[in-house]
Image (cartoon, rainbow, N blue to C red; front, top):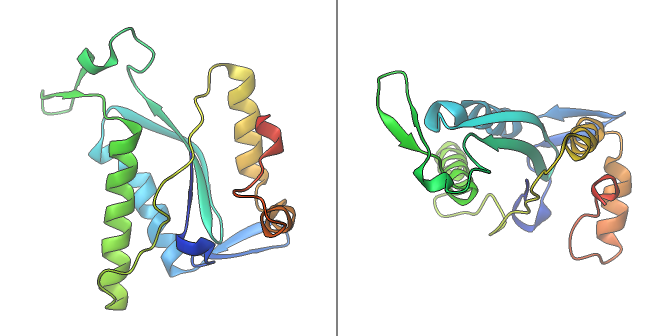
Length: 163
C-alpha cells in the first residue's frame, strides 16, 4: 500500500543521497507502523519505507486468500479469537492514530496529516512480492525521479517496477 501526506507535503523528513532521514514526525509514523501487529494480531508487516511525503508498506493479512477470510479466526496470546481485519480498517486506525498524535503534539486539532485514501495492490506471487520489496527498499534512491513525474502532471506517483 501507499499512503500520501495531505497535499503531498514533505512532513516526514528528507531523502538525501539515496537515504531517508526521518524527522520527529517520520519517527512517530515509524513507531505506529511497527506497532500495528500488536493491535491486529492477524497481520504481519513486511518491507516498508517512510518517505518525505508518503510511505509504502507491505501488509500480510493472515487468513486472506481463503475462500471465506471473514470466517477465519486466529487466537491471540490471551486465547481470544479475532477476525482478520480488512486493509481499510487497518489503514483507518493507522491514519487516525497518527493524525491524532501529531495534532496533539503540535496543538493543531483537526488538521489533516494524510490524504483521504490510499493506494493498494494485491501481491499475488513471489516474483511480484520481490519486485515490490526492491522498489520499496530503493525508493529513497529514486526520490528525485518520482517528484519529477508527479510534478509533470501525473495524478499520482508512477511506480514502474510494479507494472
